Image (cartoon, rainbow, N blue to C red; front, side, top):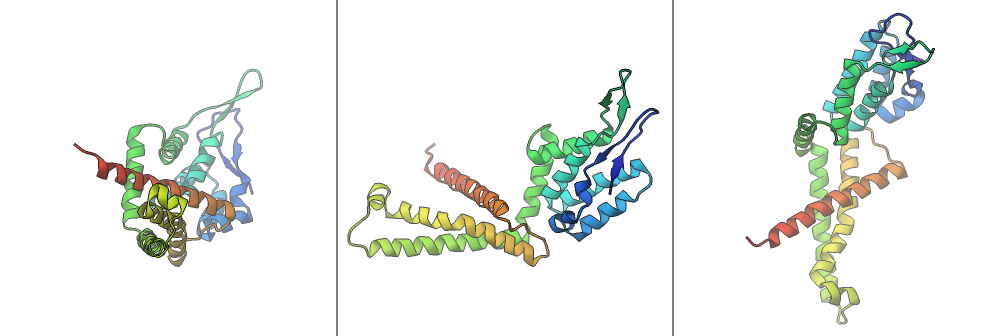
Length: 238
């Protein structure tokens, strides 16, 4: 199924279709049937400008609902499409930037952490407010914290009952070693609990090895950064 977008194109123009991958069977599996059904409805829209606006509106709704990855892919499709492809005198063509394309680029830049400060700050604040009240996120934070505390306590008990201290215990101390052990399990617990909570709320999750690997790495980086910042702040002397 082809999805041609041609907004305000003058005479002697030709449209460049948005990727047909948006409409294949994989879309339902990746993004859910609701998004796939709306994309199919947009593809049947006879007015090219309404199709383009509808796709941008869908991306905005997905972003507002917290499905940032879906929104980013939709924005990228709009940005990458030739919304007005004007034929040159030499038979070649050049893409004319459109206001709709610029709006999509602005939203995509905000998601990717680049571009103007205003849209980036708005996205970060909105995302922070959503996540701080998201039941799945609260469940993940509580579960990860409990895993960290129980693992740390179990490790300390084990080290205390050992007569001969190991090399790591002698180098960094029993407390730090227990904290590192707890952190090693805290990050994956945070990822898995968040995904299970999202599944319970009806949000489809990608359980492929690549997706899990990215989320595990992200959890280690984010939680590790927070713990490091907290440790540095607690030891600062003013």
